[in-house]
Length: 369
Ligand SMILES: Cc1cc2nc3c(=O)[nH]c(=O)nc-3n(C[C@H](O)[C@H](O)[C@H](O)COP(=O)(O)OP(=O)(O)OC[C@H]3O[C@@H](n4cnc5c(N)ncnc54)[C@H](O)[C@@H]3O)c2cc1C
Image (cartoon, rainbow, N blue to C red):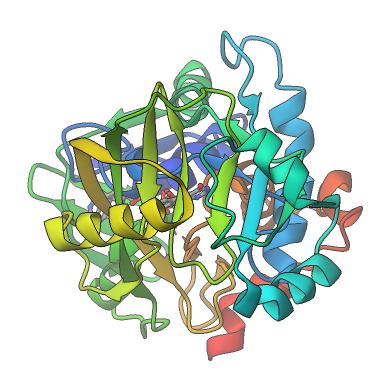
């Protein structure tokens, strides 16, 4: 039996980031069922940082995270976590109303004329696309550096990451949680459920009512086209979210922005979904596909209201949720981890979260009870 202050289930970005903060004052063990951290959703993202993505509480978490990305603590990683990219929402004539609604709801946005779009996107098919809106401050995230930075920080604080540890049972004795994996048994007064697509499964094992978290499959691929893609090209998104793409070397990283309900699993890409997004993109950009270099899929897991679930389970002592990060778990990780750590330690919210008018109640599991 291994004893610790806090057991974190899941070594994706959620588990790694909260473990990094809590291990400053507590002994922490992170358990993951896979052979390496980041195997599931964290290792499969589009790595975008956009302050205009998601519902208002998600946007506030993203804004509250920017300072960490832009001014990363020394020693956290060797190179900047953000690289300039810019994010353009594109619309056909029949999508103009949606584009205008987006322009009203967003911040830091700039309308681009057709001439400006053509200048930035030489392969643009202007018989199809009529308008675009640029979020110039959107950026690429170095997801691996962020994730490894948090794991390194946790390790330097004395936390342990134990892989190949599939949690199969959780039991509360009245003062302490006992967890069984296929290899060992662990005890701690506090368990953090950062199990991504499996977070409801973990709750069920603990005898706790699930939240109703739903994993949705999203497909991605890297495709070579007949012309080299400018590495400085913006991240392009269909305003109705039927496709997105950005440069990956001289190829395109693309997604059909599919959202297919799935049980928790090791998701995989369907060739049909990859073919359909290639077709959509060739309507917008004057390119011909040459080869699919790679394709994959990941699960984006949402609560019923699409807001994260961060907080103590009201029906069980010492069981903390950090789940439902959907399609925003990377760009919000610094603020989500700070929110979670302040709740776990019963401390007031850090200033950079309060500054964004973030209220812990918006994320609490209480709203589903
Ligand atoms: C195609 C795609 C594009 C995306 N693009 C972006 C983007 O541009 N920007 C952004 O911010 N976000 C993006 N996301 C979303 C982001 O990747 C997720 O929100 C985030 O990775 C979720 O992290 P997590 O730690 O909660 O989950 P995960 O990374 O899935 O981690 C959960 C961990 O729990 C472990 N686990 C589960 N059950 C058990 C068990 N019983 N015992 C032990 N361990 C267990 C798993 O092995 C896993 O490692 C994208 C996602 C996808 C799929």
